[in-house]
Image 1: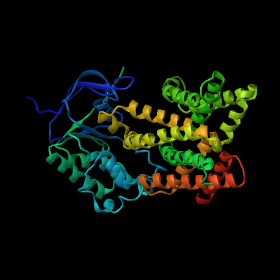
Image 2 (image 1 turned 180 degrees about the vertical axis):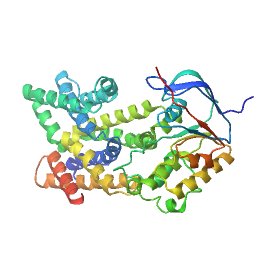
Image 3 (image 1 turned 180 degrees about the horizontal axis):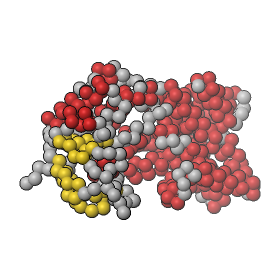
Image 4 (image 1 turned 45 degrees about the horizontal axis):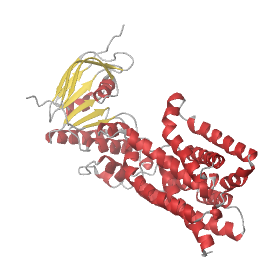
Length: 193
Length: 254
């Protein structure tokens, strides 16, 4: 019996029209797969299709029954003007605080809209990354992160893989993808006639 | 002040002064504070329509606001987002004032609804308000995490298999019915002031969500107690006194 958590067979996803080339992918527990490619090749669209937001035009998508997915999008959580602290954000997704970098631990009691862009991004990312889940989908997780933040994130991703979680990581940051992922799939542009 | 004549109105308003600032925090989170004004006007129109039809005004107000709370999504599907509440507000205001102007029987109730004549509250109203406020606060506590999660991480919320409509629809109904109850005692603008000003200040000042709720509650209750004493002492309609108290508190703290 297959252990695969997610299986794609010639999957074409898009919104109004197809936006990706047919893609085959098998995601196993403990595996980190990177998706890269130029802007507009449909990397984020593919993640959106996996969670049922974008349309599947052709091919097959199988997600193992009962698994829990977590998705981090490029959208910043709308917390401007809302008195929500980092502690409360992590409690919402039941994210584990263990392993948080020290520069964030000491700022957990501060409201999110008073943190720097990088700190807020990393906390928002952490809330998804460390939430109870079997498969974590990350969309450009290194946006707004400095070198130290990216380095820390790589360690966390590898730790999650050791815990048998599977991760699908969309990123245009080649160095990050090489360091964090077990294998990388490069998406090509989809030419729609 | 502590005679039954004033104690019953005081407790009726106090229950609302506890509920509305808490409810207002979630309306503000969803950027739907205008909904409070719309529901209050619809409740006033419903109460006056009820009076004309020979049913209890409170029941009329609750049915009208509750119906709109439930039917909001049907309207929202046909209209641009953000238009629904202003339209409901205008419709409720027009209907309420037209009924007040054209039916002598409705004139006194109409003025009471817009002035906020809390002192007319009787034991029946107090029982209704308490019977609603306690479960409403419990329900709000239950919905709290889901409302926050669906706002901050809508995708995560959906991926956890949580259906949005019981949370959003349940909250809309809770808000509409609470506003209907409040409008019957505090008046349209008094209710709106309690649901708008304390959360506005709390969102500016509080460091966390929990402390934001507490601050909003504290501002609402203190302003209510001051307004009650002032309106009673100077023999003024309660709604405007409450609203001006909250405006002053707002300007001082902001």
